[in-house]
Image (cartoon, rainbow, N blue to C red):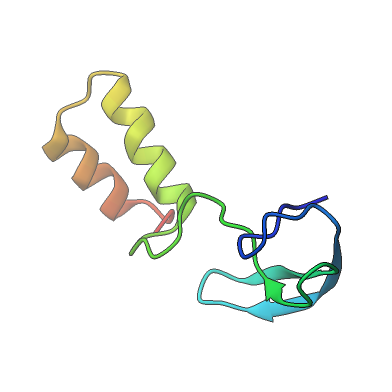
Length: 79
């Protein structure tokens, strides 16, 4: 069960999907307040895809320089 961001209730049900720039996202309907919501995956309103962001963070954690990370990410098909 997903937690409603509006009323914090946990009695929600799946209620279709919606199209975003990243792809299809599952919509939920809160049974308590009767409002629709899409759960936050942690990458809301980011310019790049979650796959590109995690790849860049992984390369930075491995000690690769920022310039090399940028060139690696921009030349790969992750973006």
